[in-house]
Length: 618
Image 1 (cartoon, rainbow, N blue to C red):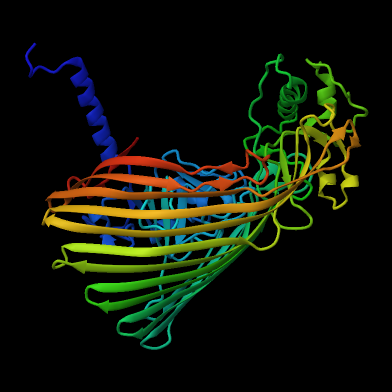
Image 2: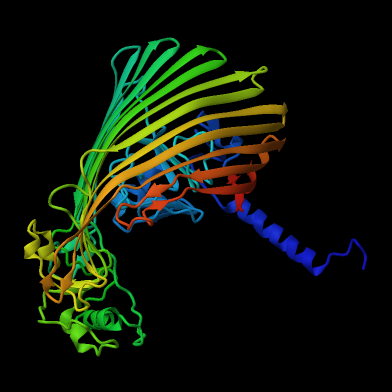
């Protein structure tokens, strides 16, 4: 066979390469305005400095201010709706959503795989018993210049190392001209939203910007149980932001932000869609059979609509109170050297009580199913108020679900050299998140309980029944204190080897520590008889550190075309699990190596188009 005649393998490789190229060209979007046949220039800060989107060798999606307003974005889930390859985990509601990019997720009691930054400062982190903090909370999405979603590990420049990517929320800064706006909107489910912004130039050197965002909306999920709230997934928050820019002198600027957010809603619950019909499963009597019975009962009563859900929590609630202070000082030492210091403080407190699985397996239903295994402690009495729960979280009457305060300090030096052919930056990063008192909750799993009784401060009021005699299930009280420390040193530089060829290299060393003290009290049941509480404590600690960084080569064969290849090493810190038994209460750190080939270009025929890159993970 001629060496120039393609084999079947070569055909397949050509097809695969074509698919990768097409994916590269159309895997991202930039939400920008157009004027006639022109695409607006999009400025991003993906590399901690302002650059044209087309000149940045990063897979990034930008959602502009107008797009945010047109989409009426209010929470984290709204961002994921408009950004390719970005998904959310809203298990505990949109107020406590965590992000996932390219399959890198954050689950319970692990560190965030996607960092969310507001004005270059990472979001407050909550206690790790539930997913809380680490995201774009209520009121974070108003009066923004844009939202930038960076895909892939951010292993060098950003505050906290992440394996999935970063989301940058860029607020509008105070402007030199007086102005402002008021926007009032309404909609279905009695939606009422008020946004107001005022920009006030005090004098030639001081500018102030004040904004508020007030939103109310009834829930769209119908609770068919008659227990607790009639509707869930409502919205009710107030957010306020005060920012100032003070030009101390011609080379020294101080930018300060004070923000406050307060939300209280009925929260969310999952909806039951299907069940395991396998009668040989040992838990069929408690889960499989009653699950099928619940679905049949909902169908027979006409309560099986898409938005019909089951919640048996007497007081379903999600509250978040967040306060933040961010102070950024920039000193232009000379034309080639700039010093930036970022100091930030935050406080995050929240409550969450929710029915995680949306189940209502009554004792009557379980009693009607023939057990496939003998029960050592059969049901002593049947109470229609008791239901079998796989898992439910309730607010502890003594302390919040999460309560954390944090200090962040970052010192950064940026500069240029070699007639601006060299652009570099280096910095130090410090973050300390500490508990503000105890946090935790009450949970019940794998037993029959009247959930409303579990909200009592007196454990003797609990109305529960465990036919398995406390061998598996029970009611668990947790109280914990979580402490996180993150430190890093980093440097990155880009050098133009030729006018059309640039090499970039970055290195970072990160050292992290997570530790905590946890108290667990478990109440088991022998039938309906509450047994003596089982008390245990743990104090896990895990330290992790890793070098990360990148190596990148970008080439511009034409003015509107950039080709690049890069290698990035990402890292996510280890974490702790204060609800687990000793030996299972720590998670070690993880690393990821990313190899990325990309192309960015623009062309005007037949319509203005921007094309974006694709990445390969190894």
